[in-house]
Length: 526
Image 1 (tube, rainbow, N blue to C red):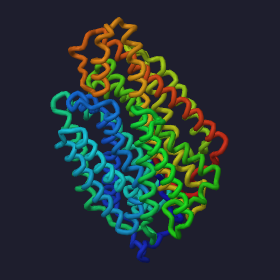
Image 2: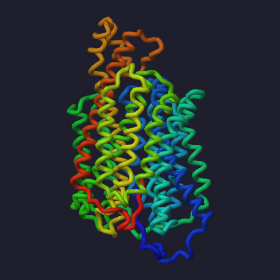
Image 3: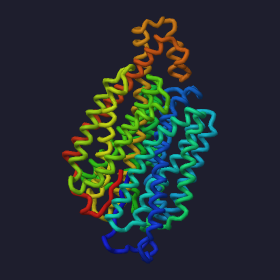
């Protein structure tokens, strides 16, 4: 999901310690490096969709409230978004391979924590640990590839392969989770991530170590960034239950605003900032950060809304849902790979603008979903949205790098990765909270419309708010009412995605600099 700057073509650049690499890596060593880094990307993205696919089973077993359910996938992406830039710096300082291996080991620990969990708190704690691992893997896997493949053309190819691997992880998550849920307890879903991380570590052992330019870990900036993002996500999720103007949520908004404002001030004053605020003087760079965040805001938002709709409204198994979403994720992989290879001819504006417009149209189409809508009527919308997401993946990364000077390319690469992850956690948090809030607010009206006795309403509302309801023994009228209210929440979330995508299309058309990526010699990713 990020790109890395390339050294001058045809030259061997000195490492941080001043030593020149003796020669290009052998074909075998290069293949092992590429496989290991692609496995790392698959691991980090597999966990996202696998955990989303397991939400219904987790809710049924642990009786998780709708708000608590949103925290499960959000906890993982929250840690990734908060720590991804510092994790890249740690790799530069202490070794990228070492940081990558540490990330894989931490993901194993996090996944095993979820596997052993018997409460919602345990699941969320494990997801937080896994998020630390994902933050270490993402930037360092790309940095390892950048060091192993100095030729800019070859680097473009391998980073595009890395991007495709991340998409394969997203596509495989629901299928693996569904298969395991058909035969085992939901905890086993998280063993799949641990198993893939073990294989990743075994392959990465043979990767050559590398370090980046001398730098310094920005501890104050990291603390303020993490605090600000965490307070923001807390306000988004819990505000859906308590109200966005309740005293507790107002405090969270204030903490987020203060921490993020402090982050800006600290970064402006720092000698070695984590994120140079002067980069945002470029309208193109600022627009690309917004576009990058929006791309994953919609991607993860549509994924979680779709999974919950099919599992909680149409009562399909996780495996059946996985096969339906393959149209979405599979097309994304193909289009992202193809777009990454052609943007040197098209530039950035065209695929970004068209991609966001197509995505807005597809999500607007999802607002016509009804509880009884068959998949045969909407499969093409998933194809469209997958293609739209694929069209904006590589151009948004490459556009970030050409919006800044060459010496800032590495920082721009880290920034676009961080903003993508912020978009991901915001999409999960906000859209999940809006869904939960709309479900509660519309439920009384739908219970009345389906002639459910008023005396039964408190019990139904309590079951929905605490996650203790089970559709197997629920009266048909109650099931229909809950399905209608839930679908209304899905409509609201899809409408928000459509509106935000339209804003991103406008920003892409008006502000993004339309220079092809080969001018700067940078590589692209998704």
